[in-house]
Length: 175
Image (cartoon, rainbow, N blue to C red):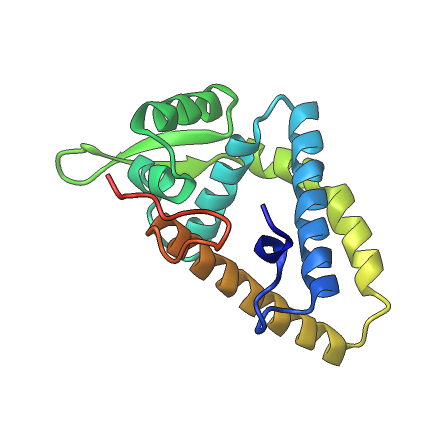
């Protein structure tokens, strides 16, 4: 492979800032793995709880299908995940609709308590780190992080749709 394959496109973001975002993502993932491991929870379990919490906060019903789609899991993997969360006391299944066939997933108070305990150290350290910034600086960073999340979602969608391949990887045929 040539050095050319490792060149950044001319319109790419400042390398140092992208590297910091990658470092933040890596450290956040390490924290989740460590905190989850200490509580016998997989990263997927914690991601599932985050999905349920986010949808519930918007007033939306969370079904196994939504969880499967959001986490990109197979149906059997989704069932195993929900079974783990149910057995650990973090999620309950509720039947909805006139025929009660639709299943809604709801977090339990135990899930909120355990989540709070797991993520309190991270929240405390981040709060301390943010205290040195002005409200205007935090507003700017919030706007920046929002567009970075949006850009990451767009890149993920492009990758899942077999969008433009990187110069280093040939385009594979779709199945």
